[in-house]
Image (tube, rainbow, N blue to C red; front, side, top):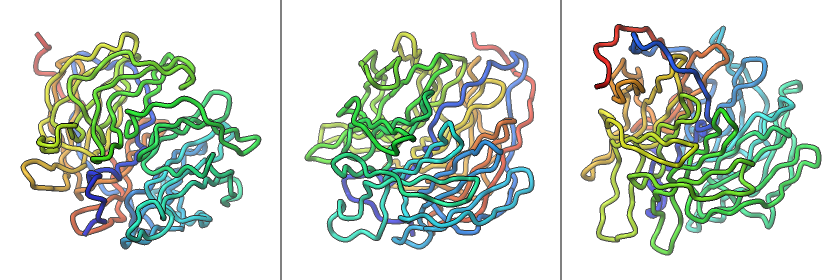
Length: 400
């Protein structure tokens, strides 16, 4: 069984992927080909885990930290994945084993890890939330403590983005709209902007350096609810402003940068402020123009999904895989994979994952290879890694 979540929180909340979720900008591809492909096994992690993070390091290896193996105890041991050899190697142990945390590669090559849950929960959800941070040094394969978050503010399912000055920006997380800036020299956090309505949102930094938050959710006395808000900042959060609205409110969706200043916003979980409305997984998708805040609907996903993973392909298309579908009261972890074609503005199925999974980070290497690592099935954590093998096929027709 996967871990239980509070009744006020969708089960897909552990899509951290955060991974997920830092934008990778690619150029538009050929107008004559569309991508198909399949998945192949790429090795097995030392520890099965879900709700973990996977961070690409400067040397091309991937740091895997945290997550849950056997509910509810988090995994303390870290490991390094070498995409070229397929090997997984031990990489030390965190001070605070945690899951549902955020991590990011800093400019100096170290990895910042913040928040999450650090111990099994009891009847009070906040008792186990973490306000701590630590830093992994690849040169020594060791962890060091960083400063506490201001006012011991805890974070779960938050996001981190690297800043040009070498620091990082922490944003979002369950019931927290506060932004925090991390200074690696002082190893400290400073409060920054605040957005109460976008606490569960994948941040995207476009090719021009503009920070975009599209959709997300907020906490209220009646639980978490999704939003349509689109916010933008040209200075990484200091002057965040609302620039538009999505057509559908959504949280636990993906937002992927492609074609420079465009974002594909797909899937997710909808929960309205109307208590009579039933929450459900979305198949809808839309493209946001980061410069204007305008959003337009495009073709729907072939499979409604939330808590899934997404990544750009070299040719400008977008890969989406896994996650969970919760429609009409039925929950199913997905293995299906589909690709968004920005020319026709439609989605098409490609080869499915060998193992269905949710809460699994995707990693895109410097040479464009895509790996998915671990995750959870309907019966528990998995240790397998898979690589997507793309191959182009002839485009059938252009969009009218």
